[in-house]
Image 1 (tube, helix red, strand yellow):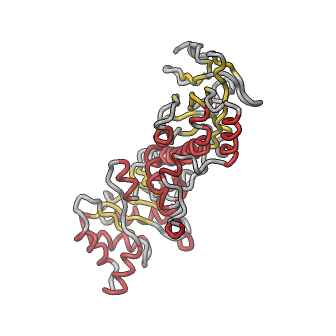
Image 2 (cartoon, rainbow, N blue to C red; image 1 turned 180 degrees about the vertical axis):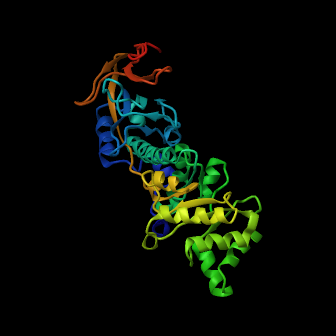
Image 3 (cartoon, one colour; image 1 turned 180 degrees about the horizontal axis):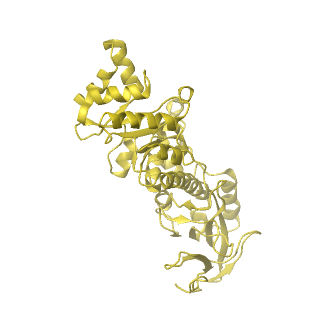
Length: 371
């Protein structure tokens, strides 16, 4: 058994996460204390709020709900939550922290699971939020998630799933696409051209081989920066594939770039001169929401985004008990800096203002008076 454990990749299995083995040790010790004092069945209302958003963020996308529900399945708890993929702000219009999720039930049912609950939400929401920011910057232009290689392989499916939830138009990882029920999107690696040049003396034969072997309904996107100038490679791609060429991808290494915007303009101009303005330009390599506007203005039609999404900063969630059931009644109680009582988030259907209120309140919109 020890030998088998040593041969495993370093990651927690589904059962280990479900059993609470990824928790912080103080929850294990807390269980022992509460068990001795007969408090494991104390019914509590715990809420999840955001302690802080990454620098420059004024909103985030809520994600990870699917994983949390699977984690809590079979436990004697009730979960209240905003919807997967919904945007939210850290606070409402008055500055009160917004409860994005609440868990109600005997504390012993979920106390060790606070750590993985927050982990699921922090990571998934970070990925989806970054994907949404990238897509917002790209507008109608395509955003493709190429981030599987920027995370632990055990997380690649998770990364691609939540990149798509956040707004990515496609994902490259096979397992991620399977989880989403969509077809994976990708082009070709530099290794393909290197091998054809090494063994056949002509890397453009790799493009023709791709066209010959790969299913005809897969768009023909040529990686046009392996050996020659991008403009020259784009010209060769048009000659090699003719009308079947859908796009050229520019993944120019930083040491050879200069101005990426100028490279895009030159490639687009060459395609125009050749009568192939229909051929798209896909840009990848170090792309994020800050670079996209200038790349798009230069003429880029689609963006392959890797680390910016896959290694996105997590959203800093916290879980706190804000009420306990005593003698059949809810008693508001919370630590300093938190608002006690069972609460809900209300959003005006007319103007979108958020308001936090107690569960027995029916607030009206402070801005427009709507509901």
